[in-house]
Length: 232
Length: 232
DNA sequence: ACCTGAACACCGTTCAAGT
DNA sequence: ACCTGAACACCGTTCAAGT
Image 1 (cartoon, rainbow over the protein chains, first blue to last red):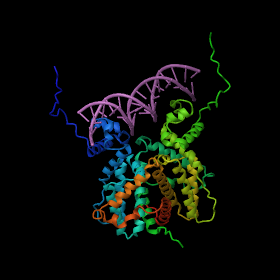
Image 2 (image 1 turned 90 degrees about the horizontal axis):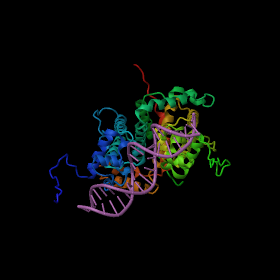
Image 3 (image 1 turned 180 degrees about the vertical axis):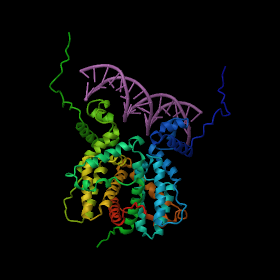
Image 4 (image 1 turned 90 degrees about the vertical axis):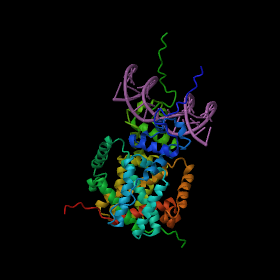
């Protein structure tokens, strides 16, 4: 009578894959692509892997840890060597950063993770390396390049974070309308400066503003010497 | 027998204050100060106000909406007119932005809200107004000032968001150690640029880096003309 | 109009117990 | 060592019902 639990050996279905750090990251990326970061939770991911949430804690200490790993994975798709070789080093830096930003924007909310916990994986290092060499091409002094990269990446990351999750795409117009109304409605007696500048505070496409931002940073990095801490 | 529910009229305790947008914001700020944004939830806030979470939805559409209101409230404490009148306009701008950043840092995670949904309340407008006038003092062309303010505030906000919630203060050293190890461990054959720059990628106090960042932006804003979209 | 309790549909993380 | 189910302590938001 002992119905020995036949192990139903030959797989009856896609053979539940063995758990591993890489397998989990792969599944996480696919959940991210299909449902967004909001749904990339330990529980949701576990169910995608046909296991329980607790099992994931063998591989990741926390949700933040998981997000960092996923981010590093995505950073692998950044284009470090743009096709077009012509163009100044400025242009090439700008293109690399644009690629970085669009990867982050595509995966929305993830950019905010990047802001909170700086990545330090191999793909991030490769990006830093590339930026360093481009700044070197432009004869930017090494000490400024070192700090400048932080600024450039912070800017690119922030813009992605901003665009990233302005809620669902639906309320972007609503929100811009709010800001726009606030600015336009600003009484010119209380806010004369704002009234004088007017529409220009909001003008320009995101792309134009982004490009100008990079230009400002590069010009500034070339112009502003690093502070010298000297004991007079 | 009808024990008419005596309204126990004269207050037996601090007289539950009437609900109102302002009262809720005040309570929210105090929860924020005492427990941090992580605990500033609809439910927690409701219980501080001795009511149910559902009641708050009469005044705020969502948690994001609530956070925006709280942020605007805090922006009221930014120092727009530093005492010391001496110093260049550069210094004064730097001081205003520093005040803005420290307000955001003090209330940690909130900076991330600022990144996602740009504030548009009166206190934010006052800040923009002040920055405009300082840039005007520095003879920065109006069109560049308009876009430049965005850059300056984005930078200040991002830095606050970065410092804001690197998890609990405990693991900041751990995280910096991770980055530091990653950078130092970077094989000099694979990452020659990083190896060459070395420690300098991580050098400097946060304050020095912040100050340099502002200097870079101001120099860049003065140097980089706005793009002209001309139909040749 | 405002307020409420209860419900729906979720979370992260821990832990004792199994293999 | 790895995996699991169940539990603990929470969430945001909606809704019918009350005042």
